Length: 127
Length: 286
Image 1 (tube, one colour):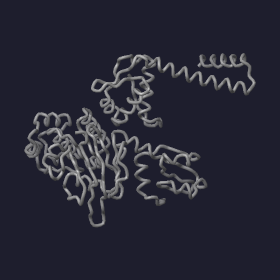
Image 2 (cartoon, rainbow over the protein chains, first blue to last red):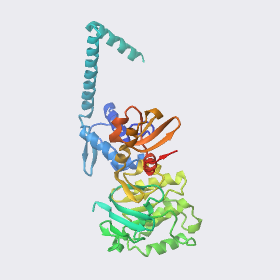
Image 3 (tube, rainbow over the protein chains, first blue to last red):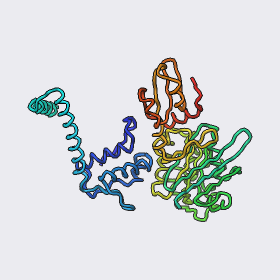
Image 4 (cartoon, rainbow over the protein chains, first blue to last red):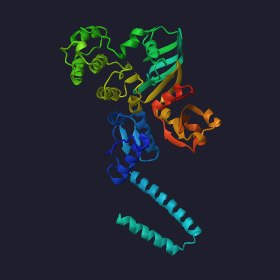
């Protein structure tokens, strides 16, 4: 798994670790039951504080992506990618609801809204 | 034994300087940075921990042992690195080993020669022939050879070039990797701590300003910037330190007060920012 830390991104280091672990789970780079790098080794290699890595791993556990087992390591949970997908679908739903509300205010018909979505999707595939 | 170093209400009075009620603990397995401007009491604190100065009051425990009542037991587990080496200049490395190992029952000769090799120190050299970085590594090699559990370093990076500083930080993070060793590290080169330290203890004018997690420390402060007309007396009262210039100002504020500064440019603060602004004691400076 690739894990690198940017010093100029402005994103806290623990958050950078979390994001990269999550995207590795999503892309299948990290499979269920695989272990994350050992906490203290990762801290040493990335030259960051042990507490920073601890925070990242603890929050990943609270969010249901990994399981910390004392003395054995930090394991990727099976439902990790499922969970991420759920979170993304939830985000899509929220954004779409917002679009619908805006469309109502603007008096846009359902048809026009569908049309708008198709156009936008085509533009995205072109990119 | 979870706390490798416990300092409680440590005080020392000199003429013209007072170290007042310093309290902090360093758990095992972590690196703590001891910071503060020159003359704030960092070295005094370290000398009191090492019993090189007589404390006025307070308590110090090293791996649970009182640093005065059980000095021998406390120091058996302790490794110390100073800014300048404490060996005789004329000694060869072998004489260094001979004299240091005499004090430690568990001295490991093999470990010593392995560590020298790893640090690229030639055993045939004399102490005075070693560079500053090498002398520091020699002190570390000694501490590793009797398996010191707690390392105390006083300004170890001040005379080092960036390569040696990076090496030192790497050696320290390797040292604590197994979770059984801790490091207390005084420095005013805070960039060294920005990443590697787990805890920060900040002493200012002989008083404890903060002791706790580094991330928490950095996150409790923000830098705000704005134009001169955006500065009001009320806002000024909430600022911990401010620098005015002809086209605007920048100031250090507490993150919890951030709401009042939302209209300004807000940036994360570095350890240096926090030390510089708080050391001005709210005075304005140009």
